[in-house]
Length: 148
Image (tube, rainbow, N blue to C red):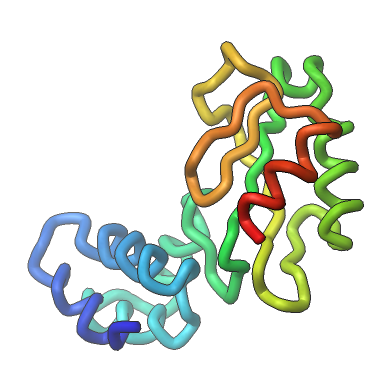
C-alpha cells in the first residue's frame, strides 16, 4: 500500500483536491485512515474539524477500517417494496453481522445506500460498487460464495 502522505500530496494543488485525495485514499485502503485526515488538514490548510467534516459528509467516503468487500444495499422505496428487508436479513444471517458492521476477519462490511441507479432490477446490492440486480434472500449465499 502507498503511503497516504504521498497520495494526499498528489492532489494538493488541484481544485477540490481534498475530496479527490479522499477518494484516492479510499481506493487504496478501502477507507480513509484517521491519521490521513490530519495530514489532509495540514496539506490543504484547513482545520482538522473541516477536514473531518469533508471526510464524513459524503456517504460514499468512510473513515475507519472496513472490510475487503463492501456490500451496500439500496434502501430506496422501490427496493424496499421489492423485498430488500429479506435480503438484509439474509446478508446479516450469512455473515453473522448487522448492517453497519464488519466481520471479525475484516472481509465483509454491510452498509445501506440510497438509490444506486439500478431501479429496473430491484432489490439491488453492490459489492465494491459492482451492482447485483434482482437479488433475493435465496441468491445471497451464491453471491457471497463468489467473494469467498
